[in-house]
Amino acid sequence: MAKAPSSRSVEIEFFRMLNRVVEPLVRAGVGSPRLAPGGLIVLEAEGRKSGRQIRSPLAATRIGDHVVIGTFRGGRSQWVRNLVTQPRVKYWMGGRGREAQAFVMTEGKRFRVPKSLPSHMQAVTRFLAPYTKAGWAFAVLSPRKLAKR
Image (cartoon, rainbow, N blue to C red; front, side, top):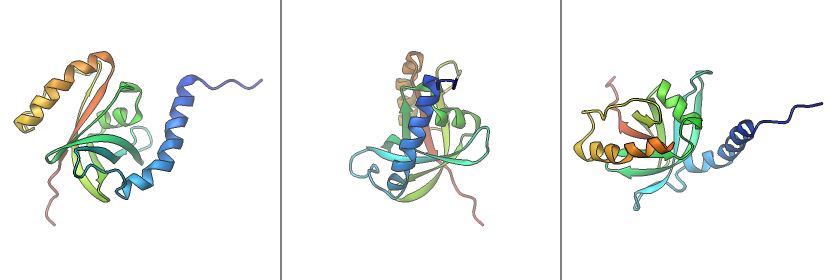
């Protein structure tokens, strides 16, 4: 008799299937934050086990040069786990790829607000921090300066 899939594996497969449909549209710029600060981005992060680049469409809020992403799924979210392991990422917004450094806040992970963040982004992270105790996870994507070649 075949073993029934667990609810966790069904959840993971659901989001993988959804991402395969939505990701190309969002990467092309559909739904990106432009005039309004909220919208959709595609996060491209290194898989913590496979080492492959994994793309995930996510709801995001643009605040100046920074982007804030979050999930009520907390540490169950694969993108959160990947960013904890490797915070250097790329994200797509408005049809254009951008290099970033992620600062991740998740339940059970001790963190200090980086002094490298501008004061308004430090205030945003302090505002969001208590929600991690309720199981939420957040990441602040800061623009990364590209090395001149």
